[in-house]
Length: 151
Image 1 (cartoon, rainbow, N blue to C red):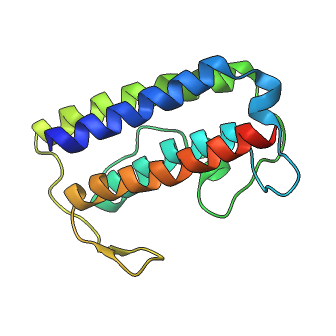
Image 2: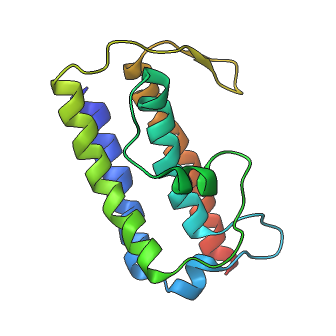
């Protein structure tokens, strides 16, 4: 799990750097040809990690229902986010990883509801969910780079 954890942390560090270096206006911009923006993609990776790791394990998530409804699959930006919301998401990028690591160490993940991804692969346990989450975050990092280029 150390390698997976390192990859996750490195992904999050790159995303945090993008958040710091990108103006609020650019974070909220939906370029022509796109259906979302940079901040939506970042909020989405936070939400999906919680859904894959905690919700499918039958455990409470560590984010608000409002955040889930705003950034889950099949959503899109409904308006500009504030700097306060950006700061919240920025903080969650690290704090949720710390919490997940603590919970893995404490072995709180006892159950897992199998989940078949759109790719046809089935996640059977929390460790597979964490590994897949890195792939998911990498996909959205690619979208973020494309959005930055289009702005």
